[in-house]
Length: 259
Image (tube, rainbow, N blue to C red):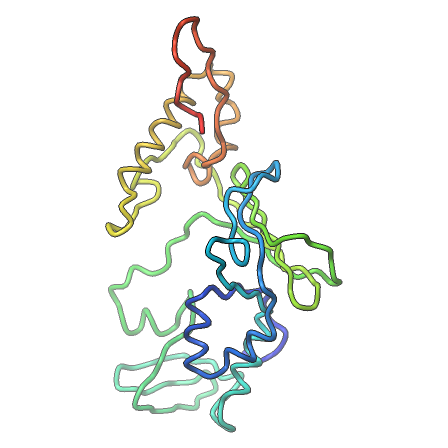
């Protein structure tokens, strides 16, 4: 691949600037990025949380165009160390690298930072299970002209999300991921969204799932026709709350499906 206008926007959260500071390139990258103010919100526009300068305490999050980030990183390299358009076809544990144009290189250390569909990974780790499709389809792009945007936001809808953030040029980077539903099957707890032990959320979210699913299953059959459209990959969307059932006289308000 040759350097150029590739990709769209990229958000740099605090851990990225910390690394870029060690490379002495953060000041230049920071200047090429726009400070983000916004957060996540519901389809009706109500905020669920705030990030960036609006957070408490404020957190610096910068949005840059990927091409600008690449340019700053390339500029920091010594002359002659970057070979563009060189496709790696094979890597061996002894540091021998074969290129697709029949050239070969040997190094003391080979860093295979070749992304999701890595060429090196299956060659070096034969037992690695490989990439597993997580059910997402995403579209992303940058507007051709500046566009007025009052805040950076990711809107969580039913089975889909939409995000928009602003670049220093005034152009807007947007992205729209969605997930497929799997018919009449709903996964719950770790079967749907496994958690690592340090998060302490496995049982908590399983309980939340159970309450939401129970509320849905108590509804009349005709109310379930839209169930698949309110799921993400067979998992109940967090903001896809079912209608509250009627409260019998003298009883307390039901908790299931309420926030």
